[in-house]
Image (cartoon, rainbow, N blue to C red; front, top):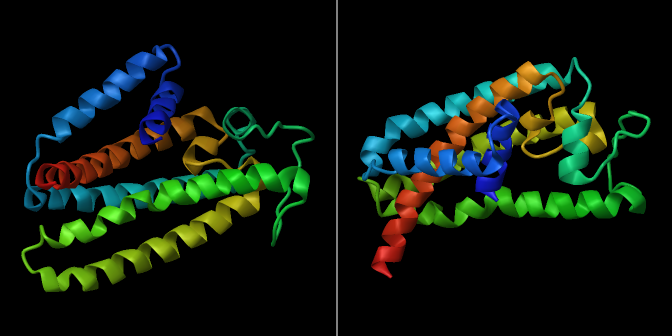
Length: 206
């Protein structure tokens, strides 16, 4: 899923590139960054990824508040056509006609978003002071929860049924979603290498 999302982002940046080539580029970048073997050396890269991600959130919110949704991306990814272009938002579950599709999409995105959390405990064995793990976990989860809850509600309030995941690919102007895709690519690449580092060690130990 991560690979597919990143390849879509690369393809949006330059549609002249074959989609298969986008996959090869993603794998090649992951191979290069994957040469970092220890989490100690990966720390500053991971910290940089957080602030790049925050910049992406701010860019996305600024754009969606002032431009129309990306109707093409919404139809391609969520099968939601432009129709009359009117944004519909709901405080509860949408009507069945919209609710079933959006419910399935939301469920899949929730699984996707928290799939990496299963590896969190493995970070504890890599920390110099394992007893500090719970502090880091609480701080990280609090930041993630507050930032993404606000971001999700903000974007949904402007794009409604046209909201897609990742939200930066739902921005209307080409310049905006190109910049967002480049930033998102960088953070996802770092996250992929980080989880890959831990995953390989887990697989080796098993």
